[in-house]
Image (cartoon, rainbow, N blue to C red; front, side, top):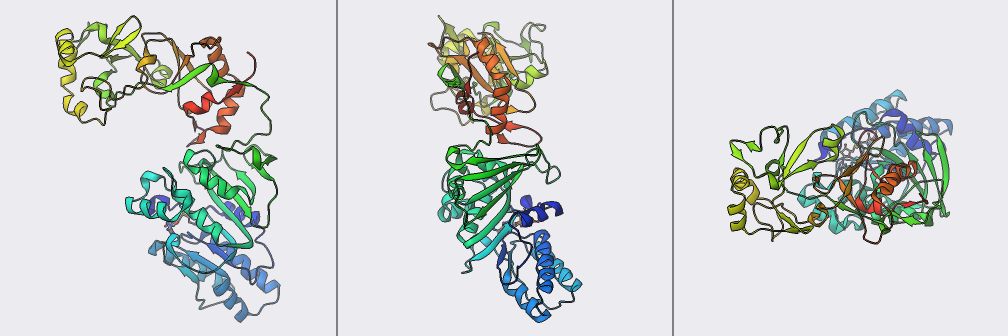
Length: 471
Ligand SMILES: C[S@@+](CC[C@H](N)C(=O)[O-])C[C@H]1O[C@@H](n2cnc3c(N)ncnc32)[C@H](O)[C@@H]1O
């Protein structure tokens, strides 16, 4: 599990982490912890600064060795990296002719370690592992021990932040390189509540690829236990802007914006944003790369009944102009979706039934809603929205917001659907304009969960909570 997170900090960010909490001079006697030290990329610079400063302050060699042993602490769970770290630190010490140091670096799991020390500095780049990457037994133990991991799908780094904060002394300073998603994810709320009070600054590297291709966007968070002002200094490194943000304005998701919204109309009061239908086995239902009309609805020598075949759409198929079809195993009567019994389905649509039988095993083993029959979609969600005019938008936004208009008979099978509320008073073409506006794009960039490249992920709630100006 740990090899996934062994991505070490490049040198310029090491300097940034240390400078952010002024780990620069008068360091002798101050205790520092690096709780997931890997090969020691951060500790090497810590040790170098410590020795140079101690020499400058006039400490003797013997005093400096004692200081290194009792002021600098580290943890690394992986024996191989632990050994490398010790070698690296010895090399730095030898440059100053300081041999035989008994380093306080431990080859242990930091999260379950018990050392009764309060630190002046905790500096690091902890392991990031998402919930699915954490072993089951570890997940259980972390949920038991850490408040920030108690709810839902936490990231492994939450536990490192929480434990660090309990080990800082009352003037302690903390500088940590963490994933930008901690400000946006639903399950990061408890963590955000914990860090808010003493948070001094956020350095956001959102457009920079710190780890050379690793799929995370990172930020440095800087906390100081002696800081309790009502503002956080937000620094957008990529765009070279900075401003103060009122802590009380940071609620569920943290949005970093200089401007206060003057808009009053909430998108969700006019339009409904929902997930698309979910077949839970698209391979059986969605027909790609075959022009069914051209082949008179014959596939695998089976003639499909045309009335249950609809045009199918996903943000991807629309972007690439691909024509796709979907089997829609329901009847539509006076605008309402009607479910068939198995006998009715067999008698009226023998071709489609035979075709779906090719996938029967897979269809039966789907984790489907209890009431769904084997030949139906796995979830009954969004069926009511199918026979309406709608817009389709992707949950992943990159450089522009692409919004597609779909007709009643069109079936979107991935992305988010936007339909009009009955009392809306605004048309779908207005909704499209709103979603393609600069304001919406900026909002999405500030609220979405950062992904690899330049993309963010948004949810239906994010879109419904957008407030817009008169159109
Ligand atoms: C992202 S790397 C960072 C290493 C170092 N801090 C740096 O910036 O170069 C995270 C390191 O944490 C280690 N690690 C993972 N879980 C740990 C745990 N519970 N206790 C201590 N170290 C751990 C990994 O083996 C890995 O070397």
